[in-house]
Length: 366
Image 1: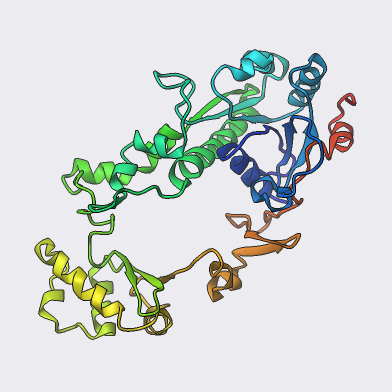
Image 2: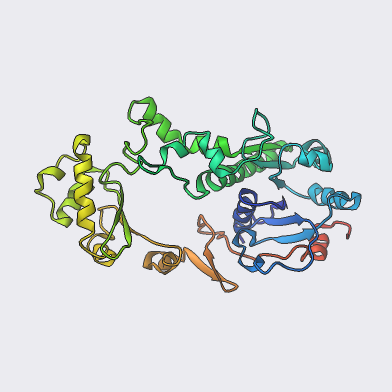
């Protein structure tokens, strides 16, 4: 049983950060029930939808009075609710915070949006790339030649969105246990992504971060913090920021006495240092560099593809990836010594658990 065993959560079916948050909470033991519209048959891709794992599905038609009544019955039994619609949609369905909190005063009403519940952009459509654009994050990622580069949808959707919604929901549940009062959690990806940039804003305030892309310590411009192509077209990452680690790196690659490489923080020589390292790493295939540098204090790792990552010895030893129902997927995180998380269920088909959930939650059958 995970640490959230006994916590009941309703998830309004959606895409992206809402389902990721629900997956995270389900991995940690919460009983998460997804409410989704009726569908004809199961999707062929549903078995591979890792973001849907670990919870049960109830099919309800929220455009009907009966469907809304069923949803309200379930919400009355829940500790929290997750929804990721545009502002006002839940209210128009008759499932807004005022209605739900009157029915269930201790409910935590978790709202996941890109722009937030209010503000000039609140009702505009958008995606991860737009949300992180507004926070300074996207402008700081990329090279001078490439321009801004989207870091997948990790910074907005999942980092700035799902994770902040999860901690907000859990914090509010904890508070409700003592106060008996629920509340609304307004998790905006713009807010979360901005919060993730706290270190960079600290450095900027201190005059140690420039708005000029690829000119800073952590954005890939430093020769000792970046990625390098190897002789076999594979890539490696290098990050010996600390002087003792940088000194060890120079020793390992035979550059201890190279005059250009000695003054680590001499920015005037960074471009020359970078070119030397580009040429160096192209002399050997990735595996040779791994044998020389991996596992040392050089701060080195191979850049693995998603096909390669589950097979790396470290990931295998920690079971960072697991195969469940013939699907390779990331394991639950973080880890708990006494109440570990687990992947309890395969991704459900819509409405698969109607009768089971109604019975378990003590709700009138559909």
